[in-house]
Amino acid sequence: TVYGFIEVDVTRAMALIAQYRRELRVPVTQHAFVAYCLTQAVHKHPMMHTFRHGKSLVRFDDIDIATAIDRRMPDGHRMAVGYTFRAAQAKSLAAINWELRAATNTDLSQDPLVKLRRRFARLPWFVRSLFAWRMRNNPHLLKRINGTVGLTNLQSPGVPGTFWALPPNVFTCTVAIGGIAEREGRKMLCLAAGVDHAITDGLTLSRFTASFGALLQTA
Image (cartoon, rainbow, N blue to C red):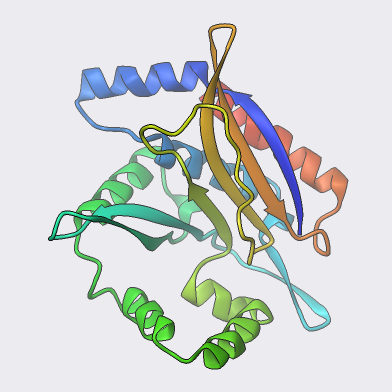
């Protein structure tokens, strides 16, 4: 895995999100916005969700964005819960935003995949290691359990504006949303990504980064 860091001017996007919140009284989230832009960029550059399986390359039709959401539990504490936007390439920003809101406010404890992950976490470490190795080497299993592209959001109240994070990467591409820095009156979103260099080369990665950045900038 190779890592890269960028800053993207999201001044216009943040202003539009704030406008939609006021006019439509709908809490459009930056998490949903980045997930939508990431999906569109991956759809344009399909090598970013292509996997190696043995001696072959596997490319899925659907882009499944695996992320984590912050849920408030019944006892009041918050917990990060894994969630996957299935077939995200067929969904609008509004659909992804509503799905994210519903997942955040819904009890996911009975979701089959959540139950499977919890059973997995209770297994002995050597069984977990064996299963994790198998999943890393079987993209079909990885897609079923997690997805095809990773996205993690590390923004939280009280966290300094300028920061990046190195996301753990089990996919061909995983993106981490960092802080928002102020640069001469502009809002700059800090992003980092981990990419499997055995699948993608530098030219593919640079083109993907340009497309992703342009989508975030133009909103």
